[in-house]
Length: 428
Image (tube, rainbow, N blue to C red):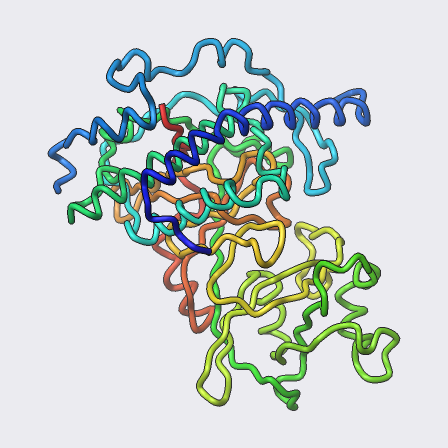
């Protein structure tokens, strides 16, 4: 996905559309609430220097920024914000109601450096912001305010947060200094810090977010079938086709050979590559795989469309009925309503989470201990998955690209199983 480098152009476009987006987000939120009620009657130069940010830039982003009192949350917004929120699943079906104050409360970052790779974060911020700009009409789900609406946070606030962080990063990188976004004092001054308390209906005592980890694995593969590489990875011939034949078949049906010569659906899909069964299962679980071919070439493949069957939490991978069709892509891909629209993401600064109920583009900071020292790591919710819809108690951290599960497990030992605290940042 292309990154728009002209700051003034971005800000102009952003501000011109925010008002409309805000109205649209409120409309869609209320609409989804009404539908739910109808169908469910019971319903982060030296960071210590505290360098001031460019005032001209701030005036473009927020005209009242010179007055600290005006950086407080909008009281009118908070008064009008609904206290209760109807949680939905990936099919937009109502699941349960939750009081937003049980999940999100006012917080403050501790005095520790906020860790992230500057250039990688800038890529993900830009690509996520571009998704809103280019695909919100085709994908109105991203315009849902979600549960943070109960704290007065709108989609407009999310977009302002992305724009502000992009502008600060670009200015700091251009001036060859460590970005101010790594300074917790700067964060606490310019952002609302909202502490996220886990809500797990099945583990009611859980308070800290579980931080799972995912990765892109390199696997050997073949473009032709061999005795070792004998599990095909398929793509739909026309992923925009109205023919939904592929939704009739489970993973087990597909692996039984329905698309192979002699099978009842032979000729309806294309075979991209062949993997081992283990490589195939990991591709389905991780969503993206980097394949090494015998001729020393490599290629990324990413999930495109699935058969519409839900992922069953707790069920063994090989027993899951959900099946994914893939496409070849140029980079690691995150969230998107279609394969050609998916957000290009980077390891170390990306979280997968509940984009329907928490929201795409939310900037997250997780706090944890490493070697007895407090650590803060920042990333963006720019990916999702079946295990997160709905899910108000877990995030999945994109750890990197690994050659093996052993390398992956060794790396993630330095990361927490549960965050001590988790925060969402919203531009004041």
